Length: 236
Ligand code: GLN
Image (cartoon, rainbow, N blue to C red; front, side):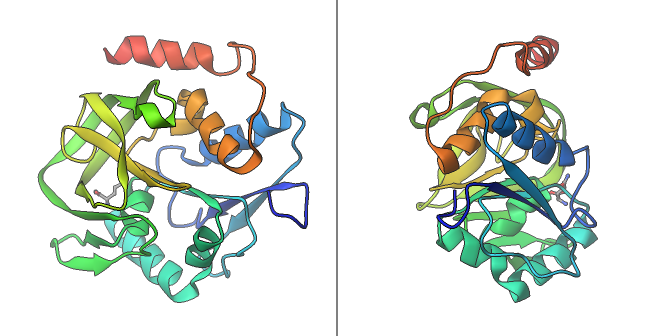
């Protein structure tokens, strides 16, 4: 957490542009899982007309349709706050359009490459088909492993560059390219998983919390584990 405050600041970026498939649930569950550990939190919603604060702890971006995605990317690039926050060690969790936006570049609806925020070494372009449906993947062992599930709906395909590492290997579904899903680089994580991802995958929420607050005690399995197991069983 930031040195000047004992409050975990969760910054939800552009709910007016990037929030498909209930991605706001990521902010709510992160907050809840922190507070259940006695960690005070503040949830800051940053509209696309507002500056992005630099002193947050965890930044969340959701999915979006093609045009709002371009608008969001342009505003984030000209604002500069998210990039500065990531440079000073904030954690970032970005979903689908948000994932593509924080990369080096992404494709517009005619697959012209457009510049991203550049905090994650990935490049996205348009695929031949739309990837739609349930996805199951295994998180990289160096991040603690574990199976994650979600719902994907994207035209984009993503290549992970040498400075980033795939977040997981797909068991079913498409993700980046049919083999890997998402990417991470330091404390910056991107994924195609909606669902929302953090309520469906409590160990992923806790991974993000640990990046900012260090070790945290486990919660009883009833806190999210039932939903995780139910979605896993439904997907496989
Ligand atoms: N517009 C992007 C794509 O289709 C992201 C879609 C989304 O966020 N669901 O790849």
